[in-house]
Length: 498
Ligand SMILES: Cc1cc2nc3c(=O)[nH]c(=O)nc-3n(C[C@H](O)[C@H](O)[C@H](O)COP(=O)(O)OP(=O)(O)OC[C@H]3O[C@@H](n4cnc5c(N)ncnc54)[C@H](O)[C@@H]3O)c2cc1C
Ligand code: SF4
Image (tube, rainbow, N blue to C red):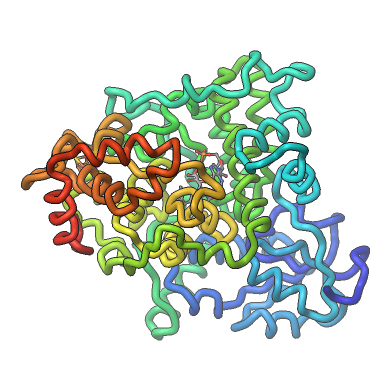
């Protein structure tokens, strides 16, 4: 910890702390650092590098003389340009938090940008009789504490959970028919960012993954507010029912697309929650959809954030399933064209072209495939972090290592999110146009997800038998007469694209 109080000094804002709620007063002096060393260290998606630089430069332009804007190689060079005491809200990764804690003259304040504080999470986690840190329990505690969708002491509508209404299979239509989601217009700051990224890449100073495209997500507070309004008006009313579905011709469906703006700190989660709640109270959005959305924000998002700190820096190296397959080249390079499996090819193309997919694509297509093939969880978390425009360490580690890859042995999720082609067929319209058949696990048209699922169950039989939620699948696998053939075939596939 540094040696000054938190009542003065210039506020150092990291690139994911860009909203007004990271400052204490209008006019407060600011330090912003654009450190190119961050971009040199990893092969980020081109659109992610663009979005972060664009947001940082837009904030610097808005603040004008109020900010020192250091465009330098390293954070230390940036700090040297701002003599005098600094305050900083605790940054969002273990590495950055340790870095600022070790700097003299920098006072580290509690983090901001989440609905529940660390103390509130700790009080909940230490609650009497709490044996497991279940998301549903945390969410209900947050609903009560923050007074969200409550009628007195009871949940609005008499129920906490509308999952039954909100988990419908894919609709028959090709799309939900909603207006296109909000898009920004690029300006001269974006032009400058594009010029710099091109120049650095040409000079061999950094390389990028994915394709460049016009910026698709908010880079300023005004843009973020416009995107939030657009979501509440056009898509929130339809958010619930098909939340877990995937449609090839409609990658957005009714999702908010607001995670990039939230994770840059341009929106505060509670303002999104209150906007959604108001839409329900005014009769503009049904309760099931609003509850589904609010659950994502004060439930899942905050839960992941607090578990990231609660589990500590070594959690990222958890590997309970002994998964050690290096990421195949085609996967790492987002080479969608190398893949014939329609769902996976589509998902990789989304990442290549947008740096974004919605939740179920991440969990049940990309993550599911990696889980079945035993991709190294930490390497996979790094891939998600680099390839997604909303990817940051705090959110990737629990989502990938814990939720998606079950590498923590079940500390976060009660069972692995592994599923075969039947699940993808029910929840999407991919299988109809695929060269494989979701109901086949052997033969030339065997679905790689179905065969991969059974090979995964066979490989992890003991562990799955020991878990009441997965024991049935393991027993089912034992009854498959062709399981040896399935395993041999999947072993032959190796890391070739399916
Ligand atoms: C393997 C994997 C990787 C993921 N990586 C990221 C990531 O890098 N960054 C990220 O913000 N989210 C990540 N998520 C969570 C979730 O997929 C995205 O937040 C969501 O798809 C963003 O799209 P949206 O804004 O349209 O979300 P919506 O469907 O509109 O949901 C509303 C909001 O809820 C929040 N949210 C919902 N679920 C989660 C969750 N599990 N963790 C954190 N926030 C959540 C997001 O802020 C999101 O904007 C990941 C999930 C998985 C399974
Ligand atoms: S058949 Fe299998 S590989 Fe093809 S789209 Fe369906 S789940 Fe994916």
